[in-house]
Length: 254
Image 1: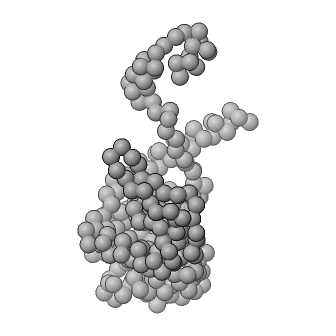
Image 2: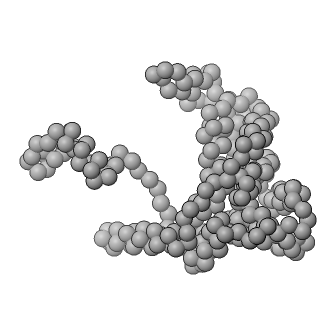
Image 3: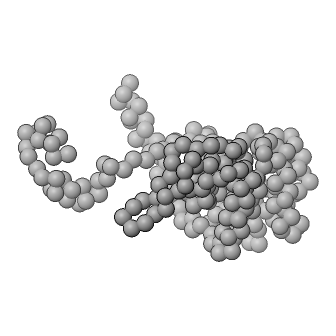
């Protein structure tokens, strides 16, 4: 940065001055992020509906956040993991042998933090209905249940409609297209990926599935719900600002 300023402006500043300036102005040029502005025409309505379930759920009802983590790979590293130690980071080989993949279906109880999970060979409507039937067996038959999930074709078709007709106590709430961040199970998927899947080395697909099962069991032993604090109004306000900035950027580059 110092060299850049000296070359462009003909001035000379130290790296200490630049660092101080970044801190005072809250600038973090070394960090990057990603974004996606949802183009769902019902975005505002869906956000208000789902956030309402998070912040003010119906009395006595169960709110579940559901999704699938597909193509989870059973990777066996070619050499043993080098564990973390003083002054050294954990290291694993970049090469591996793949022993197959599985699809993790999971439902997070938003009010308790408990997770119900099961691995399937495939991700189809058949597996989805089978899993949802398993989830319902965890609760009384007359319990009011609300499920937050994405609008994938396997979640929204005639077979699913027929299943819902047999379970009038269950209501599906679909997330806006391109807005998976509003589904709390995505946060949990990130945690299990970092703590159990990505850092593992599995000699078989069965070992990977067993690892996932054990992780869910231990998670539920000390489960705590995620704390959702953003209101629908705050989310819509931030998205509006982001969308405005995006449109300006597009206009300036056309």
